[in-house]
Image (cartoon, rainbow, N blue to C red; front, top):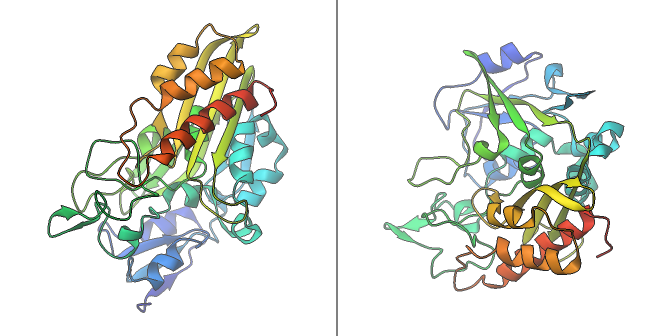
Length: 325
């Protein structure tokens, strides 16, 4: 690990003032569950690390009739222990999928959204596009855990556990810099880079995610379903979060978002539209899952993920509808 300066501000103003306008010079330390590994592998070599652990403005969960405001430094364990969050099953189930007690206690909601891709080519220093001599290492390489959606050069998968649920719930992220604040829909927070030097989200080097705002869940049913190789600490191979607005026993409106299958969460808009006016049954959930993966473009080693994503959508829909899976 390269030597670095360590800054421990006690308020957001001082934290923002410590950040550089250039990538690579400063890094923000939240829970540290990802950043420390990146620094040990020399993928990140900041001159200064700015810890947010003493910034009280970034902690806690506020609940109101309008919904939730989750401080970015709220830990996964604190999220799961909060009574107000229980009204959002999709969010609770996504948190429950983080099986490690250590990560639940140290990892933060903001850190989960901002963690870097787990692509092994990226982690070995070949960049987000995983290229060598201008050619993709992924297309004909070891790609069994890579994206099945997306037409661009980026083939990593978004690593965030909470992103699919937050996109389906219509959440926004609050972002601050020394120049001011802005809000961005979680659906627009993640991007698929098309050139080297671009990042996988819209954050600038001198910005910090301060909170996540989730609209009220009253009258909606939601669920998250993840498919992984093992129940112990492991990242999902595919996931789906759904939010259903019902009219009697029929779906008035559906949101279906798949995770771990593309560089950003993938909204299955055609499947959601197809569900409108239908009752959730095993048959309609199966058909919606099939519709959700129609646009998949698997690589030569990960076609199996198409079936997993289809199953994740089906089972998330059945779980949200209260049908045993």
